Image 1 (spheres, helix red, strand yellow):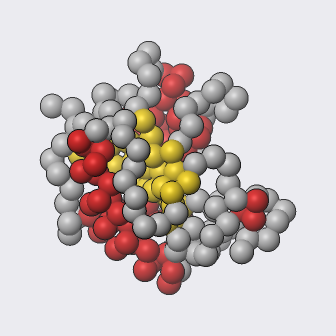
Image 2: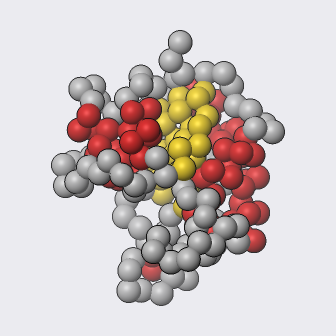
Length: 188
């Protein structure tokens, strides 16, 4: 039986707060989600995630970091926009927008609904900088809150994959990032 819902950890464990997604997946080992949910750490394996998105699930929740202009450790729930052809698919790497474009390119069926449970990073080195394992304090403290959020969100999505996400008591966003998160501006 194909799981009805996918929860995917995304991120590089050697790049500080980018390890948020894998850390949340590891923490879910202590508090598992229902059996209808496939929980997997994809790390930086974008091709594997693209194929998983094509495996028949109705909804996918990606757990990742994202600069949105909030305080470090803030959780946001973002409804991902379906690929519109403007993002070039990429088979190597783990840019979620490029992974969605790749999945759309590879598959014949429409992609599942994709939500991103994102955490505002404090320390996020560039991929060409030195390795920096370990989460910052605010992002580490967000891991159990993310697990709690998933335990609230997942039952609602299993009941109705198309329903609006339930209020989580945290920012629920969609659309472009906050202006402070854009390159060349100071994040607040």
